[in-house]
Length: 246
Ligand code: PGA
Image: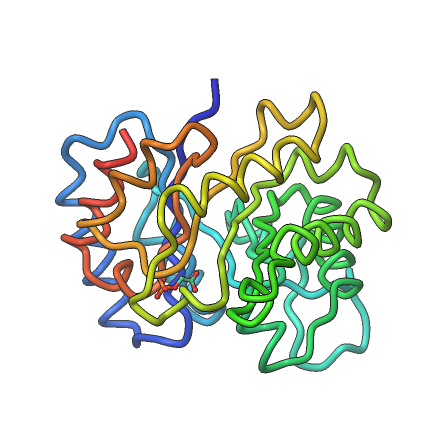
């Protein structure tokens, strides 16, 4: 069956001391987390430090973004193979903050998804609707389009080998979480769209996940874990969410 996965997205937070301390707290508090896979995504500049601090621990390293280029004259970019070389296993692609603040389109996200997989990273593909789109009743249509763009570019079978994160925009960083039923409806829709290969694909929920609401999310049949922002910056909260995924 699918192994639950909890991913911490640290976004633009912390310095070297913060990163080292947070990781040490996570490693020290690592009691009762046996089944779930746990991933942390620090900023690019802290990934090397994070990798060295984690050593051979069970906590995996992920990147918050990745270039769609493999190499060349692309100032400021970080390639998937550079990340793989650092011991990184995962890369988030298409986070709503990248789409909103940096104008990332479905097509660019599809290229990033492929670039990550080509370098043996597992892409974590974020999809989600805005509050307005939900009000208009076009949630599933929007998410279907976001997934189709990746399927058109990479081939449908490749999506099933990634992780998919359903993150309603109105729930990211707002403290307003989707209900477990709302999330389940979308997760089921995504899994159905993946066809037979989708039985093994992990589909996680993201958006205002905290220790107090994680359990009810994880109880839904098609929710295989969480992508956690704010609560991932506090070791005790993040560990509690990880334990809830067991
Ligand atoms: P949040 O962020 O948990 O702070 O809502 C989630 C995310 O952006 O992935």
